[in-house]
Amino acid sequence: MKKIYQQHGDGIQEDPNLVIDYDPLFENVLGSGVNRRDFLKMGAAGALSSVLPSSAFAVDKKWDPVVKIGYIPITDSAALLVAHEMGYFKEEGIDSNKPTLIRGWSPLVEAFASHRFNLTHMLIPIPIWMRYNNNYPVKITAWDHTNGSAIVVGKDSGIKSPKDFGGKQFAVPYWYSIHNIVSQRIMKAAGIKPVIKPQTAKLASDECNFLVLNPPEMPPALAAKSIDGYCVAEPFNALGEIKAGGTVLRFTGDVWKGHPCCVVVMHEADAMDPDRAAWAQGVHNAIVRAQIHLAENREEMAVMLSRDGKRYLPFPKEIVKRAMLFYDPAYYQNPNAIQHPDWHMDRINFQGWPYRSATELVVSELQQTVITGDDAFLQKLTPDFVANDLVNYDYIKKSLNANPGWRNDASVPRTGDPFTRVEVVEL
Image 1 (cartoon, helix red, strand yellow):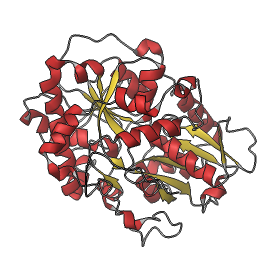
Image 2 (cartoon, one colour; image 1 turned 120 degrees about the vertical axis):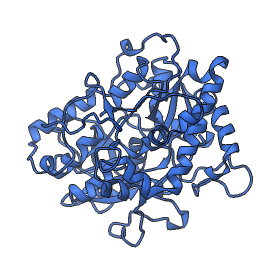
Image 3 (tube, rainbow, N blue to C red; image 1 turned 45 degrees about the vertical axis):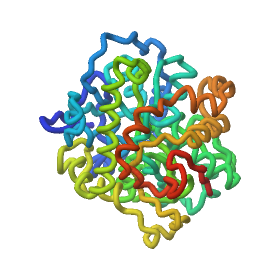
Image 4 (cartoon, rainbow, N blue to C red; image 1 turned 180 degrees about the vertical axis):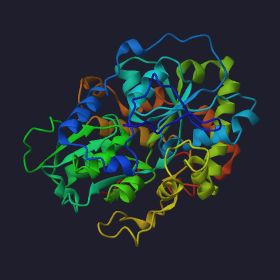
């Protein structure tokens, strides 16, 4: 398949040693006829790639204050990209390199662990796995955004409600993801049992088979009918709707109000060393400015991020604009993808406060989620311990207090303490 991610002087920069060469995004691939045998190989590779070898954990090198960002091409990364593009790091007296695009979660985790990057976004369960299963010194220091994901099903899949997932194939981007947690919770409530089996295995009528695919592989797999549905971050849901004939079954932010998805992560030394505190504070000041700017300038930023703008994301502006702007209850009625319009959520929101209640709920839910590999470490964790040990609240809280415009997410309490909330989950 031809390569579509290219290096541009003003936009994305890619490391060919960290990415897989595939082109699964647009019409030429959606019409290329991926056969089932080839796709089974893709699925197996995706599953294996979710295991991070401990050898990837390199020793901390001499500290370099230049911000080096690695990112997946999803809107979850927008705050980091905008902070660089708009010069917010520079205004804090911090240099930043052009962000580097990576095409899968495992290579991004490995690159971060080897200190190729010192600032990135990760699905919130990944640093839990890194710190407590692999003893890697990582810290969550903020949220990148809230909501921003959906469940998409194929138009001929026969799936009109969660109870229809029996006997189906369903993809998530990583075992340790909000997508896996929320999708499994929805299915269990509908009487469907999530399982992890080879795609050739026979499924019971009440079983849904879960597999891992990198986000760019999902829309073409849906179009090829190699999977029946997926849950992933934007803009791959918008792409699935427009290019792969998919239908949004449910927005995840309509299930868990203002849920976290990707978080800002740093190496523990960068987040905790007093000699680096001024640098870390400046980084978070820039991120908060970017989040506020995104919330107030969605259309402009969608174009800037798209391949029609600065080319941080390899999607046309129409796809990115849909992913960042289009959330219409009147449109999403069949199926009823938005059941709580009174929550006043957006398709994606941008605020950085890492609510303890949400971290605690993620830990509790992970302990009940079907995950491949050795997950015994999860049962030894307590939600309160993880919320205390994994997250540094200092920098982001100081930045938010200095920028009250951050309260752009309707899940932020309107009265009382804006830094404390009750998690709302309604299936």
